[in-house]
Amino acid sequence: MKAFGRRWLLRSAPLLAIAAALPWALRGTTPATAGSPVPGEPRLPLALPGMDGHPFDIGAERGRVVLVYFGYTHCPDVCPSTLADLRDAVGRLGPDAERVRVVFVTLDPRRDTGPLLADYLVSFTPEAGAPFVGLVADEAALAASARAWGVTWRSAEGGAYLDHSSVVTAVGPDGRARLRYGFSQSADPAALARDVEGLIHGA
Amino acid sequence: MARDGAALRAAAGIAGLAAAAAAAASLRDPLASMASYTGALMALNQLVPPLLLAALPRSRSAAVGAAAVLFDPILSLATFGALSAAVSLPGLLNPTLAGALYAAPLGALELLTGLMIWAQVMPATRRIHADWRVALLVWVGTLPMTVVAVVWMMAPAVIYTPYLDVICRWDVPPLVDQKWAGFVMLVAGMPLQLAAAWVLLGLGESTTARRPGDTGRCAA
Image (cartoon, rainbow over all chains, first blue to last red; front, side, top):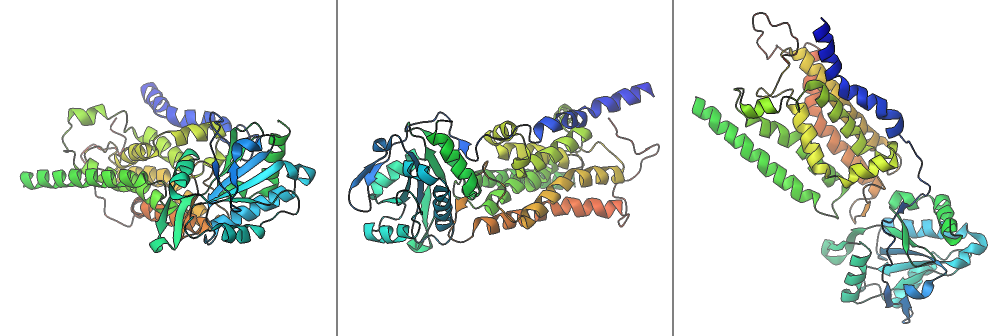
């Protein structure tokens, strides 16, 4: 009987171990930010033509938080809802909105011309702060930039649509990529605004 | 007859390896929908294991003996249930633990835990003789998977981020994709759940012949 009890105790060890670890395993700590930290906080290159024809270089944006998103204007749902969330987040920043730049890089440069992109982004202009910046690159430059930012995409339905990674990357005032937001993370503008304020004020 | 059995086992093994290779290739697509990604994980978890285990001979080979610890019923129950819940609902976990889990090869983990739970059922590796005990273990073990599948199908928001990226797909919005992924998971877990419930409710004949002196206790 004793041997039987010992055997079952040993065999129950995995269950007991899982039960003992549950308090820690289940939400032991709350993340400090809504966005996920970018490992290594790299300086990612982004120097592409803007929708107005002028070159844009993220290196010239030091002192600002830059929110970078790759998408396309014919996107049926995820891109416009992400841009709307960014607009709402920037709108919550008050005077700090002046220290934020939202950059939208089109993954569909054949259709998204500069004027078309400008018209599209006007509808996402925040109440305060700078209008969104659109970037239109040639295929080779776009591929290099997207690769650096960890964005993949492919044509679908004969080029009518794209499938693509949907990630907002927040670059701190020091030019380092600090936080990244998947679709559901950027869907909370209040939390996103808190993160941006933290980056602006060096938290 | 024995030759037929060997041929069937070989065919099952080849089919299992082919299904594993196809699922692993599917997992490498960075723009796969959540539903197809879940389908690949479920193939590794619920389709490949019975095929591979069916390829093993029933005789107590050295390999089966060596796997006795890995296929321990209680360990299998705990590991399968915990991984099913942790992979599918990472938001419940400590972020450090969730990050570590998602840095691991999920496909390999799903295959491993799938082998563990199916080993309780398949003849070559089964160690519990009483059908109702096996059925109870399998039913309890696969319950978290069914619950998670229902949560995914009913959730009003996308819940699997940030540990898996949401893909902007032209043909399916993220929330709908998540619902389909939940449906795929539900269907994948259904055969074991239904078979276990069938036995527990006493609706079928016992498939395991009772041997003289068999008390129904675990053989280990």
